[in-house]
Length: 338
Length: 173
Image: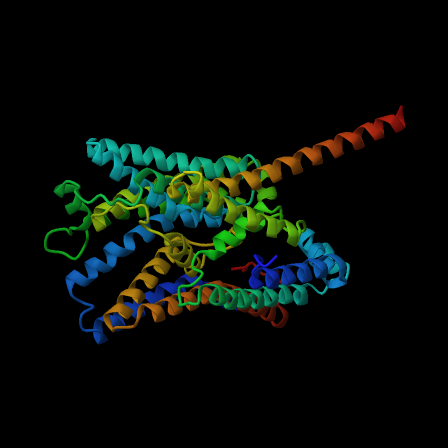
């Protein structure tokens, strides 16, 4: 009996709550907001949320391992700027995309080496690289904006699969998402990411290569960010150095809203993805019903605070309940901790 | 003498008051203790929550004062005034030698950091460096500052350990 109740208590987790909220929000929008349901709006919603959704994948792993990367928005901007400059110089687009990917790996590597070799806090390092990468983007491109990319690439960035509401770019994202879920939740590497996040020292004593794991996560984040930069340029058909300013906050907000513990060691990709689309849908609906941009910012900010408080409160509640059940029911040790 | 603006005097007064408080008052010192090791501080009887609460409240109050000063200086303010200041302020504080992990640093250091960053921002264009370089240089300066701080700390720790080791072997010898 006690075990059963514990299991029920454990089943209501924060990421499930966020997923349920997302479903409720979408259902409510379909029924009450007239313009929400048409295919064009849905494709806009997905297309505009894709950059956040893409970076949220490696960011979830990074936060789960106890680190954070605030330079992702600047990496997106830098990759876009480099793309613009190289295209102006007449380089082949496929070649440019490869160079941008390499650039993203280098950006991630710089963050990773500063964090793992010098032992600096990633918050401080990536605040620094956030300014540095954005600054380099500004040096590279100046205040120009490049817009004349080839049409078939622009079509990939903003088009959708014929006859549906699904943007073309959603397919590569889905592949990435499945890959990320499998890596984080079904492989030894994924387990070790959580282990590092829960206790770095314990993970090290257990024989995990803590630094190497963190390094690979930072590099993955840099790579995905730079590819997102390419997508951003194609999606909005414009490369400027201010591309994706402030994107890091949206990503971190969505990941935390999805129940990934800021201290590391806990969280699910499903929750993070639900968080991303919850924020995206909310913003879309608020725009449709003419909520002013300022009020939207307030709502997003409140959601962020709730996202930090919510999982804590849920954990406290679950702990309190487990304690109560233990005391009242049986002297057997409780196995539920989630 | 009249080149000193009132706002500068006001800022200097705030600066000296906070610096004096952090250096000389019990509750000020407790903030450092808290930053070095929260658990040890709590065990030593520092009212942890009260100090952190106080620090946030003071931070908010001074940010409010800064808003008023900004308005007095530029005669104009809107909802987006000060966007991105958090980055500049954190950079200034870290460049000024306040440890990111807590427990070290001084108000004067932070003030010097702020002065350095703003000087760089106004000097670079004056010596002919294009303004597009400013943000990158700010970021790289911040990275250099925290890296240097860390390297020095590691060196000092290594030196102390070696000294301790020598002292121990001298005892035995």
